[in-house]
Amino acid sequence: MSAERLDLRGVKCPANAARALLRLECMDAGQELELWLDDGEPIDSVPPSLEQEGHEIVDRDRQGMHWCLRVRARR
Amino acid sequence: MIYLDNASTTPVAREVVETMLAALRDTYGNPSSGHRAGLDAARLLERARAIVAAALQADPDEVVFTSGGTEANNLALQGAVRADGRPGGHLVVSPIEHSSVLETAAFLEGQGVAVTRLPVDGEGRVDPDDVRRALRPDTRLVSIAPANHEVGTVQPVDAIAAACADAGIPLHLDACQAFTRVAFPADLATLVSVNGHKIHGPKGVGVLRVRRGFPLPPLLHGGGQEGGLRSGTPNVPAIAGFGRAVQLASPAENARQAGLRDAFLDRAQEALPGARVFGSRTDRLCNNACVGFDGVPGRELVVALDRLGIQVSRGSACASGSTRPSAVLTAMGVPATVALTAIRVSVGRTTTMDDIEAAIAALKRVVASMRGGR
Image (cartoon, rainbow over all chains, first blue to last red):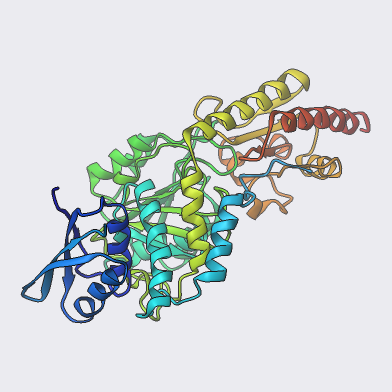
């Protein structure tokens, strides 16, 4: 399945986590989301919020002041 | 009781009430807080933002929740005039805008902003060529409602948007009446105001859609919520209800309401001599009928109908206590004696054909009685 992309750079906490969860809720189980976050509080707080809902952080890659995550929607 | 004043405000839909009650009961967190309760509130907020954004062909980041249409209009006009930080400037409005636009324009005029009030034709329509001619190098904003709140006339807003786009002038659409009812080019506007209580959502919530990159300064300063444009803890239950109300709107329901509107207008003209329709019969909001009956003051008619359980209004609820003729009808060239006969009958989701029949029957009785008593 192809990855969707959601750019949440510049979006504050916890609106970024809320938007990521809303997108993941609409995706098929197992589908992957390419998620962009700011460094700092977003990268600290968003991944745990997604994992708490059962979504899986497959990969995380630092890109300067930002992070690119691959998130797999929960099965 | 038969409620036919949906242009003033609408009954809150049952589904909206349920959404709001659940939010009030279960989701009490501050949507800016970083804990679980905050995230739960933020999810409601962002879900509603996504719904409104989709309806306005906007990005969620372009949606700014406000306390209603009046605040959205104030933020749009006052902000656009101050956007580049220079004093003065020029604003273009029509004379039939809602008071929250006209009074804000007058306030800005008192602060040195030049204001052009465009003419309208006999049906309340703005000529896009007049918009084009009114634009100046220092024009900061053109503000037009896609559909009028009193007479329901739908503006040629695509052509108005094109005129603004050609000149590179920002356009504000006060779409509080038009939202979910009539198509308008939200994607071509820089700023768009909408609100909840005109579409069977709650009062006290609205949105200003601000095109990404437009340097709008805030009216309210504080915690920097809503992208810094509207400080203050968001009214999450009302916002969630607003989002639900947007979801409930449908073309099929609009068509049903247009049928009720046409039935009312046709029967009023057939059954009551001296009936006249204000505004356009063709380019008209699906829920609006604005009519008058020769020799029958609208103010007295509203009271008499209310005694019979039929609730209508004289015009804008924000001006309905006035003894002066409607500013909208006056701008349309309607003589004062005729303008004073106007009443607005506006249907909604709860209106049935039986309601229309009852309203016509009551009108026949009341109009005959009022004419006979003179």
